[in-house]
Length: 290
Image 1 (cartoon, rainbow, N blue to C red):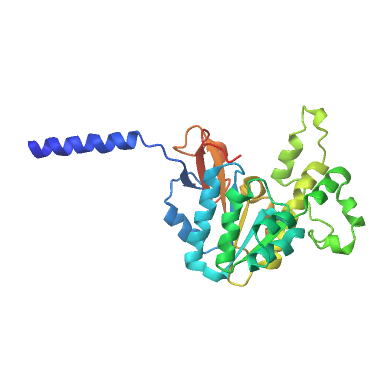
Image 2: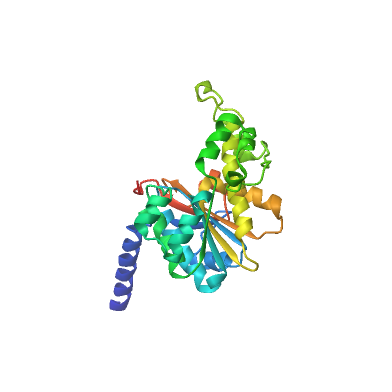
């Protein structure tokens, strides 16, 4: 009788702890099945490319993209190449110099256009690459060229000198307005004529996607793993960067991760299902990094 009482008391104690638990995130497969981190990593490590789609101001995204990097490195080691949307292609020389130890943090910050949350959110990735002698690719298009496309369409890029054209995907830029992510951008202007959204708006997004895909393809290594960090909208639904990569090589084994915020994280909302190979669901109440 005494033993039964102790077991019952233990049950309620453990249940009470679980009931008060406040998980910072939950991880699900594309179809909404909860999955353990270790199992997801085991699957991801067998890919040619892994895209971590983050929410730029979400601390869980930044923590997990670093944790995934360290876990993937345990099995893939120096067969890994890193890349990120947060670094623009014309800053590759400065990034290389920092990785080699030729310049310090201060000089790197002076020579490269770093995001305002670089020190807290992206520097850990760069320093991991530096410590382990991994290549880190500045994949994104210099933002001034995306602005040119937004104002003057792809044709505005034709006037660039050869040196500057080397910082973007080869012209002409491959573009399909029927890709759903670009269609969604067009729809943003419906009912909001003041936004003046036309086809140049998704084209300005496409120049980023195409350029990131181009530099990823240029820097991938045989039998290696390219690990790329970007805003989730650049890889959600296997579109954006992934669409451009698949045009270049349909046989690529690509896995994606997306980050979403929900009031209830017990399961992904219906609209979040299928967005990526793995879905990280974070409470909407999560604090922001900026």
